[in-house]
View (cartoon, rainbow, N blue to C red):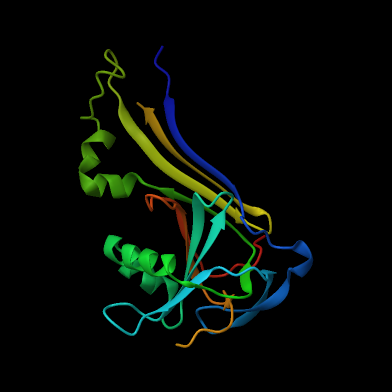
Length: 225
């Protein structure tokens, strides 16, 4: 008897900060949302600095602060990009391979600043990828005309859904991130340190190649639920 199958692809990351944040220093601090509202959120802080640069005002770069927080033996790091004007969403639209490379090179030679202040946050998200994949040319795979002879040589099958889910937790010890994709088949001048107190982009990456494992936008780091 033919049964529905689910093919899963997972990615997991668990990294400890090279220089950890002391939980005793975590305290509520102001964070300005994109609509201008100021809220209090749990902010981690540490005295050990991080490579930080101020970019923008030239080329096509909007003014932004970029800082890099390494994990463990520094093979991996979190790159934090905080726009000083405009929204994090606007920066996402501009962030292509060339711009990412430009920012990475600048941070690599950036000055190590004093205090680092970063919100604790947990992000979870889920998205159906079927519409996007269909628009990219895979519509037949979701239709009754689909064919997967090497997987199911004697049964007509099609893709019923493609669902992607991700969860990221950033805290004093480090970062835990996991993602799974399931395919169902069935029938300005810088301050002395860096304070991340506005919506920002984070990129968890392998430093040697620059390959990005996880990325996201934090618009409101307050605990949900």
